[in-house]
Image (cartoon, rainbow, N blue to C red):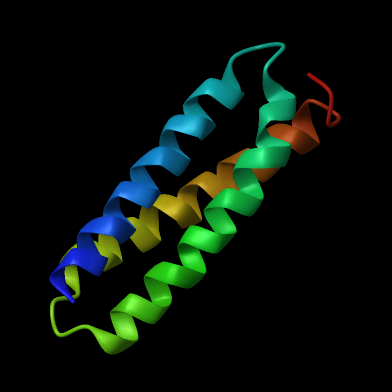
Length: 83
């Protein structure tokens, strides 16, 4: 189960990287792809938190995915979904 926790953290890091690219002007539409990616990562992280005895990395992945979802959604609203 330790490998799943590491995978969860890597997924969160990738979602955060996608968010960082999506914040750049004219790349805001990338969030349309990144938000569902982060939602899947969040669900996976929650499953790993419930099933794994080692929860620390999965919690970090869960938080990173949640931040990517929240900030990405705010970015889409502010940029009217196109900028």
